[in-house]
Length: 96
Image 1: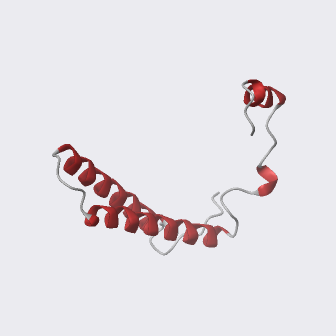
Image 2: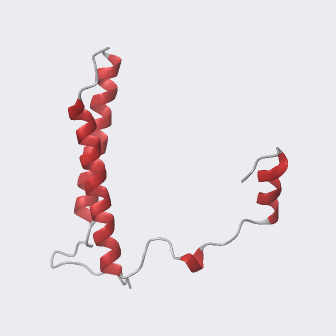
């Protein structure tokens, strides 16, 4: 059984704004790439589409987390990297 709440239509809360946000991001980036390919200056409308898509996506994520009552990543579920991962991170002298 799913613990997520659904509305009267059987749709989980926050799904529609997130899908709309993804659609706006996709259309904005596609239009921006096509205008870039055509050597036309990038218009602010495409940037606005992507920004509006991000806003809708975040709004949907907030509604989803409010309906479940918990955040997407729980602090108790996050584990420290394994020794092998630490060895790989510091092999080249990187400071992580």
